[in-house]
Length: 421
Image 1 (cartoon, rainbow, N blue to C red):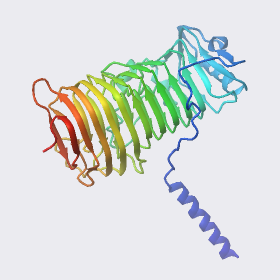
Image 2 (spheres, rainbow, N blue to C red; image 1 turned 45 degrees about the horizontal axis):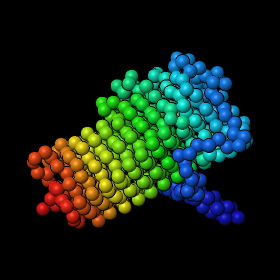
Image 3 (cartoon, one colour; image 1 turned 90 degrees about the horizontal axis):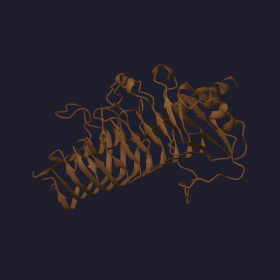
Image 4 (cartoon, helix red, strand yellow; image 1 turned 60 degrees about the vertical axis):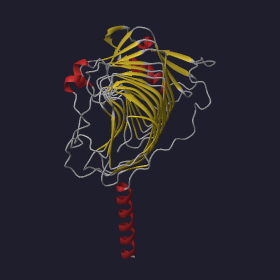
């Protein structure tokens, strides 16, 4: 009997250890609450309560700290209401510090936050122990609408910004994102403006069925690490008709992202559209199913980019397409870079990230570099299934060129620059 009990204990211990060490399953998008609905239309529901932050003590003068008033109003909306209701931030200037808008809520979903006013972040970065400014988590059905503005007032914090992208030890204290969405599904953010974030404008992680529409995200070209929209570990994210001018990537997507559709983005200034960097972390989830179309990039340092670290960890990116892209004065228009932060003369071990089925089609405009197509892949795996079709990129009156390393893309159609030799 003692032996049997010992065997059972050993088995249970092994199962627990294995469960802790097993990789987490990727998120899969469930039913889409907003499918086939006109999300651009906002109509008050019968009996819908309007919970105004000013009724809880908020003052629209831009000086009074309204954090507690916002939190009290959210508590009333989310946890003390059962029918349809919305949170209203009226016209005026409201100063608030970091706070959570946590679900799930007891009121009828989707929960609506209507922002008409100008919401300003406090400037003392030591207040941001939560890591981000406005944190939305654990929702199934959330709308943020109204045409208002979230101003991160990040200028004073930019001098303390760390480059988390290039940190070799994977330990980095990034500046707070303005709008942070986590562990949520069926999210719509529409018609909102963000300005001068301390870190990213919008960070989406561990989410499904997210729509980001008609947003205007602005920050100075010199503001460090102010990505417009940063996405990780999420499934089914739709971004349409957004305008982003910032100091880093307009849109960046890293591990665990799949089924992303980007349409009619206007990007610039900034660092373009990036997938990666990949291979930075152990047990990375793959990136798959990214479609980017009908976009314009103006005065950006990069255009369409897939980037992966050499001499790091395994990863994968596949089924990625860029089509119908217009560029104006873009320095590095088309890039696959598996020597990230190591080029030129990289002596490190090759990247362990597998890249396949990446397609560039109908990309035209002007570049500020003669090297318009630069595909540098890992010599360990190469890049498989890359196609380049109908490219017309001009560098003044001088010719443009292509470079292909450890990949043999299929070139077709009109080609300027010409195909790799």
